[in-house]
Image 1 (cartoon, rainbow, N blue to C red):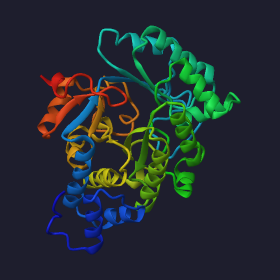
Image 2 (tube, one colour; image 1 turned 60 degrees about the horizontal axis):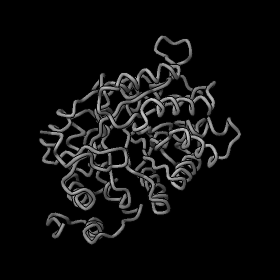
Image 3 (spheres, helix red, strand yellow; image 1 turned 90 degrees about the vertical axis):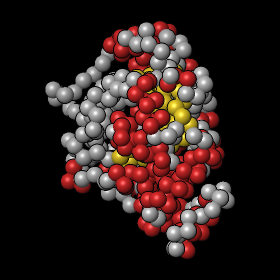
Image 4 (cartoon, rainbow, N blue to C red; image 1 turned 180 degrees about the vertical axis):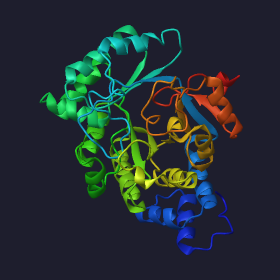
Length: 374
């Protein structure tokens, strides 16, 4: 961004743009100003500048699949469309053996990651979850296991009477490679109390991720947006993530997760527009100057929106998924059977003007950029 766009007339925005151009960190207050006052083209220019500093013209994806052990959960979050009570016809619960069979169904595919997360089951303890890790690693040692959100970890470790460090160390020994970012929602105490007051606090979420990082377990981070939160709440949420990343450097990626209205107790709110999504991606890319990757989770947004987001700061579309997740399908996501081939992902990235890079779970390229797309 060698020269600022001539149309910037607002002095506050001009000062922020100058800071971004100079590689300086913006404040949470300046992030709020961007949310409130910056138009979409300006946000795209600034976010694109930061995106290129981190990732050049590359856009990443991986070959992955999900296991969602259960949608039975001890918590009753208002935004959740996934949770079903025990006797509901839409509820399910896999045994460890059934989960291993899911892994075995990918034996002849070159997937590199399994993502395991689901409801917080009332009866399962840490040994149950550790056993799943051991079975998977015994069967396919090279498969990266990204498993158990901070909310799941808080429940299982607390129930076992362990400290967070001891519980995480035990799970790491059993095969835990990294942690997904789910459960962050919004860190503001009042908003969190209203939408998910039963689950782990913001402080606990951050504590678990920090201690995981210190043990050499990387993680992702998320933010649920587009419900009752304000721009100030979003900026404060990202501020806490940025502060933690300053201390540990353990976050691989930040994933803004859009509130979807179907089949939950907050449906009356509706959903924010695609423009609102793009503004949020862009501000995240501008503000989070120490997290290298911003992910547009395509099963949530839909393929077209995820592709457009590459021009507003995102650099990762997640993975092939293989029709193995129902969390956003049950909330009304555009793609009810989320699955993409490598060729389809590559085409989306290429048509958007970027170079597709297959990655592993910690963003190391698998092969040379663009190789898998030819």
